[in-house]
Amino acid sequence: MKVTILGAGCCQYETDYAPSSHHIQAGNTSVLLDAGPGVTGRLLQNNIDPHDLDVVLVSHEHVDHSAGLADLFQAIFVRTRFHADLPRARRADKPLTIVGFKGVQNYVNIAAQWALIEEDSLKLNVVELGQGDVWQTSEVGNDLRVEAFQVPHTPTSIGFRVETEGKAIGYTGDTETAPVLDDIMRDADLVIANTAMPPSDDPEVKRLDPKMAAQHAAQAGTKRLALVHFYPELVEAIDKIEGWVRESYQGELVIGKDNTTLEV
Image 1 (cartoon, rainbow, N blue to C red):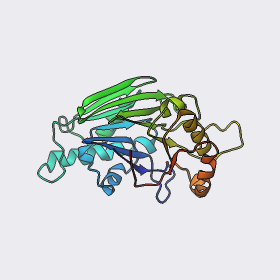
Image 2 (image 1 turned 30 degrees about the horizontal axis):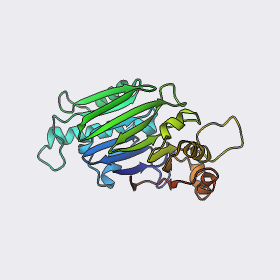
Image 3 (image 1 turned 90 degrees about the vertical axis):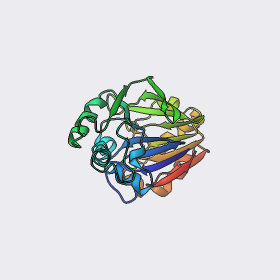
Image 4 (image 1 turned 135 degrees about the vertical axis):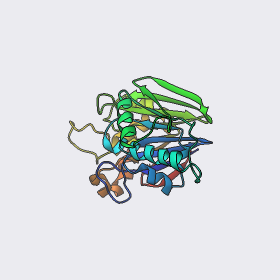
């Protein structure tokens, strides 16, 4: 299985730190994990064909996690509808499943309208999940199981635990520190944790940071921890991240950067 960090940044663009999106390739199964702006181009930069996507997981509605849906839909629709004889055209009968937070259907509808998708030209299946909900399928190549965990960010924000090929990948989405993160990370082969800012001495600051993520990973027995979603302040402190993490977590650490591919 391959996991590619497509965008290790946030809404504040920095060189090598584009908005949130990641990709999981498990056999013939192609899964996008959040769809930040420009995700279609970043897929192609990493030799990942957007027309092969089976599932898109969306953690919450913020622009840096969802705005790429529109350009993704349009790229697939235009190639399939008007240029089906060209390479990489998607089969018109191949559905794209969007699995996301409660209310994601509204955002999919808006993105589809913005992308000018014509009826029957791109079949979109939408699944909405809340705390503890599970979606699983064997119709996308590999058996795929996705469990949702409500995390403290927006009222409907969720993190994911993705299981396939006997491996487990956790994704926190944007979140504060909370006990639910231990459930997402429990014995996972890889966790992608959204750590926005450097650690703070202010006890009122609860937004997940590298030190907090490391503590959760250590408690949960996470095998490998990848940190992403860096704000400029954390990019400036990049050389300090490993020191913060090693105070509690001794497993394999990946300090995220755009276009990084991991074998899981």
